[in-house]
Image (cartoon, rainbow, N blue to C red):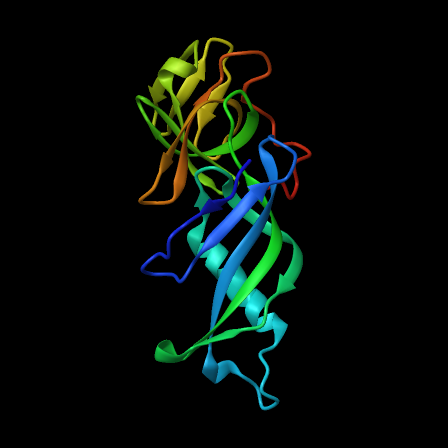
Length: 210
């Protein structure tokens, strides 16, 4: 896979390039180059900037940038490779460092099995969150044998009496995805058509985060 490059965003001095290491699964390892701007006022008395300050700013930038369409959501930095000597940017009173690092990303792929938790319901379907993905939509068309009920607590009830309602954990398959450039999110359409899909017991999932 070739290199990718993004322009600077108006709210964030961000310039990213990267390539996928040999793997095309939902969890990816990406090599990245990132410009990190540090204010000159953060230079210490010895005339240097601590590595921790550069890394902290890098992590903040990745949190704001959130995701890339091709690679998915930034999950975490796995390896800091190099930090090139800073270049003074005279007009802006910043020092520009070029940081090379490996990063773990999460890219939802059609056909992958995932787990999410229900956080919103209407008569047309439910919304789940799963890890960094806040908009996973499961429509009534993709949950066969479930019908909408509202007895003071809206949800969906199946023929076998299993129930999907707020805070229920659901195992689903990714049916389709769509990138939203404005919010920098990957919208996911989910399905529970198939074996072992649907609401699951949370017993034994202490500390499990979705």
